Amino acid sequence: MKRIILAILLATILSVVIGVTAFYNGAGYVVFSFAEYTVETSFIFMMGFLAIGFFVFYYLLRIISRLLYFPNYMSQRHSNRQSERSKNALVKGLIEMSEGRFEQAEKILIKQAGNSDTSLLNYLMAARSAQQIAAYDRRDEYLRLAHEVTPSADIAIGLTQAELQLSHKQFEQALATLNHLSSVSPKHGYVKKLQARTYKQLGDWDSLVPILEDVRKLKAVEEEQLEKYEVDAYLGMLKNSIKHTDGDKTERIWQQMPKRLKNNSELIYLYSRYLFKQKKEAEAEVLIRNKLSESWHDELAMLYSNLTVGDCTKQLETAETWLHGQSRNAILLLVLGKLCLSCKLWGKARGYFESSLGIKPTAEAYLKLAELLDGKMDEHEEAQKLYQLGLMNAVDNQFKDNQLLIADDNKSGRPLLKVIQ
Image (cartoon, rainbow, N blue to C red; front, side):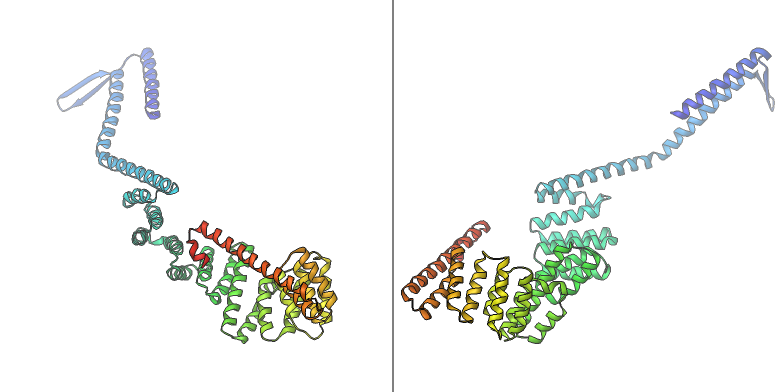
C-alpha cells in the first residue's frame, strides 16, 4: 500500500513538473520513425503514455508473479492452518489431562501428532495420559514414536519413560533407563536424583551412597532431603550387615560414615544396639552419653539404662546431669530408677519410679517398681496392685495402637479383619 501511494505521489509530481514546463515553453512534440511508418505526437502525451504504460507493465508483472506463486501460497496456507490445528489440539489435550480426562486427552494428542511441529510433545503427553489409564503397551509405543520423530531428544524421552516406570513401580526397568541416561549425560542432576530415588525403592543401599555424592555435587536435591536419603542409606546398610551378622562390615560402615551423620540419633541408636549385643557396651556408652549430653532422645536413654559398665555410680551421676533440661521427662526418671537399681539404691530408685509414673504411667515403670517392692522392700500387697496396673496399662496401650491401625486402614481402604488379625 505504501509503495502504491509513493508511486502516485511521484507520478503527480512528475505531471506537475511537465505541465508547468509545457505551459511556459510549449507542448513540444516527439517523432517516432520505423521503416515506412512515422508517428508524431506531443511531448506531454508521450510522457503520459509512458507513465501509464509503466504502471500497466509493472502491475501485469505482479499479477503474473502472483499466479505463478499461487500453488506455493496455497500450500503454505494449508500448512499454517494445519499447524494452527495442531497447536490447538495440543492445548486442548493438555487441558483434558489437567482436568483428569486422560482417555480423551490421549485421543486428541495422538490425532494430530503425526502432522504437528510439536510431535514430540504430543507423543510424550499421550504417553503420560496412557499411563494414567494403565495402557502401558500404548505408553511404550508413544515413547518409541517420540524417539523416532526426534532422536536428538533422548534425554527428555528417557526421563519421561523413567518417571512413568517409577510411577508404575517398574523399578528395575526404570533403573536400566536411568543408567543409560547417566551414561549419555553423566552430569545431569535430575537423572542422578531419579537414580537415587530408584535405588532407595529397591533397597540397594550400597549403590545409593555413591550416587548421593554425585547428587550433592550437582546440587540436584535440597540439603535437608539429601541428608534424609543419606540417613536411610546408612541405616539400610547397617541393618543388612547386622542381619547377616557381618560384624567387620558393620564397624567398617560406621567408620566410613561421614562425620555429620555420626551425630544422627537413629544411626547412633542402631549402632549402639549392635555394640550392646556384641558386648561392647563401653563403646556404646560413650556414643550415647555424648549424644544425650548434646540433645535428648528417649530411645537412646532407655538403651543407656540397659548398659552395664564398670562403675554404675558414675553412669548414674552422668544421667542425673540430664535432669537440668529434662526434669519432667518420665523416660529419664525411669532410666534413673533403673540405674539406681543397678547401684542397689532401693529408696532412690523407688522415688524415681514413682515420679515417672506420676508424670506418665508406663508398663515398664509399673513393672520395675513392683519388682522392687516385691523383691527388696517386702511390700507384696502394693507390688501386686502395681503388677495389675502395669498389665492394664499395657493392654490399654495395645488397644489404642490397634485402634490407630484400624483408623489408618479405614483411610487406605484395606479390610479391617486383616488389621485385627
